[in-house]
Image (cartoon, rainbow, N blue to C red; front, top):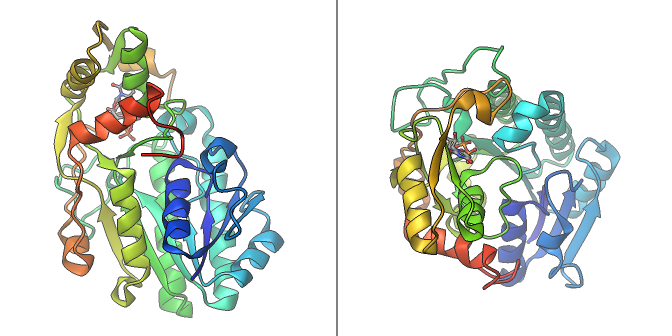
Amino acid sequence: MRVLITGGAGFIGSHLADAYIERGDEVYIIDDLSTGSIENIKHLKAHPRFHYTIDSVHNAPIVAELVDQCDVVFHLAAAVGVRLIVESPVRTIETNVHGTEVVLAQANKKKKKVLIASTSEVYGLSADVPFREDGCLVLGATTKGRWSYACSKAIDEFLALAYWREKRLPTIIVRLFNTVGPRQTGQYGMVIPTFVKQALAGRPITVYGDGRQSRCFCHVSDVVGALMRLMEHPQAVGEVFNIGSNEEVTILELAERVRKLTGSPSEIVFVPYDEAYEQGFEDMPRRVPDISKINALVGFRPTKSLDEILQTVIDFYAGRTTAHGD
Ligand code: UDP
């Protein structure tokens, strides 16, 4: 198979590229390196079945050319990370809305199947936990810039489903819950790389708010497996799927586990939200996926526990594994 991955030099995209290369497929990526990095694909650059283009998905003629060369498209290029979203809201909205428009329009010309990466953020402030794909989205106020990400991704979902219903372009939507593993950077706010780096350096571990907010973390290798299975399942078309783990942990417990696993002397400090982010921030108190839909269709179940996941990130940041190994 010939696979196009937008955002292929990003954290999840580069792991997906690795998996297809390993399987023997032909991989094309496009990435503008805004949040992705060459380091993530360094080991693939010389591979004869790996082709990379450093450009933006806003560049329609380039996207058209790449779509033409491939059989399927994974659209993972997006502005991600709460810190980036809050600090660069214009870029977030433009990348997530316009970039997806370009990819869908070009894929439609050749009727190439597209999988769109959406996010658990779209559930917003919904209290209907665990979140089901057919549940309502409860987006926060427009004065809180954070929600621009959820809203832009919700538009992507509507657009992708509209292409399927109106133009019979086969599209699949995945809502990715917190995904972690080697190569993820803490630069844009992600909590696990942030805590691990703080613990390894013996710096204070910064828990925002009271630490009672919770998340479920899934290892990138499990997420990549789910993406590949969905892409190849004919009944996934026109559907929305949660992908994530349902092992819930509070952020305070997470900080304690990181401290224990690293054997770090770091103290855990509580940082009020208004000190953590200048403006436009509001936290999601709980985020747990219902994964019965994807489990029923492709048998998805996360295989790595939270401690195993944390260990892979600790090994990565402690320099015990390379950027290319898990
Ligand atoms: N968080 C934290 N300290 C940090 C970074 C994040 O306590 O240094 C918290 C954040 O407020 C949220 C959770 O960790 O409750 C997950 O944050 P992240 O930005 O990783 O992802 P989110 O799930 O919010 O998109």
